[in-house]
Amino acid sequence: MAKKRQRPKSKAKARTKHSHRRLKRTVAKSRPPVLQYTPWSSVPLEDLNPLLQRQMVWGQKIMLARVLLKKGCIVPEHSHPNEQLTYILEGALKFWIDGKEIVVNAGETLSIPSNMPHKAEALADTVDLDVFSPPRADWINQTDQYLRGRK
Amino acid sequence: MAKKRQRPKSKAKARTKHSHRRLKRTVAKSRPPVLQYTPWSSVPLEDLNPLLQRQMVWGQKIMLARVLLKKGCIVPEHSHPNEQLTYILEGALKFWIDGKEIVVNAGETLSIPSNMPHKAEALADTVDLDVFSPPRADWINQTDQYLRGRK
Image 1: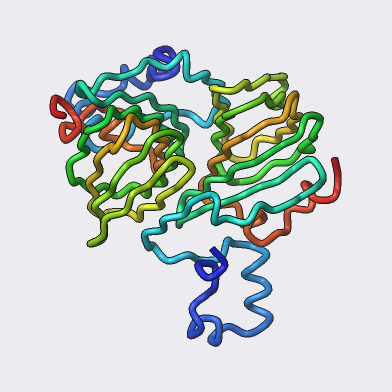
Image 2 (image 1 turned 135 degrees about the vertical axis):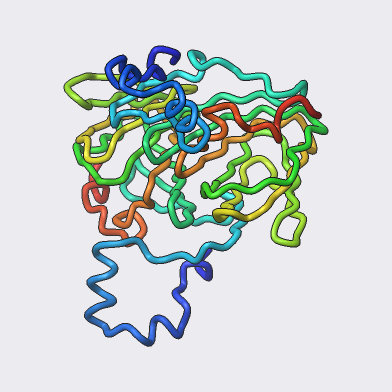
């Protein structure tokens, strides 16, 4: 995976240090429209906090994330312009969203429109698939401080 | 689910029969940006041919399909402008794509760019998650003849 994420050398050289830093903060790293075969076992499991781990694959329009939450993990309220579709494979997540509380169990999905604030808590050890469009720039660029270093 | 797919009456009335038919052929039915909680158990399982069944949920930018293929099922070569991300949950699919043969096993993903022709065969009974962006109009409108009535 690491190799696939490298920017072509010619383009990297053309950018100044400053413009490159600005780019990282605002948009996802560009990824050419190429076929990508990716076993999850080849994707590093990112530790965000003691109760939260994550893997991601993405193309130009779609990001698929495999999110592992231990029971009691809280994802604090946040929102993003990216549309989200959550599918729980194992366990259960309780969402606070749109003025409601919704428990999404294994075998259930939740489609979350752009910019709708939501908070979640893992009611059990959970395997969650999250689809985003466009890909989450803050996840790719690791500027997702709301998830890091907390339970 | 049936209720969610209905177009609001006021909009339906404003369209002529002709323009409505044309719309159905070219773009997905519009779906307002609302929160949708959908257990897979509430989504009808569509029989496409004796070896192929499908369920779908979708928002404005993302479609998630749960595709069940019996061993030996062939998905004939086709292409679509929608970007695709395939994740095999159970079983295995062999793809003919981009001049290569790639077997995608359980726990593996394949990101397929827009308009790249591909064919697939189920090497075992398979549970396949397919993500598309934008949602597949031909799947929603049931104009996907390449999948119907064949093994």
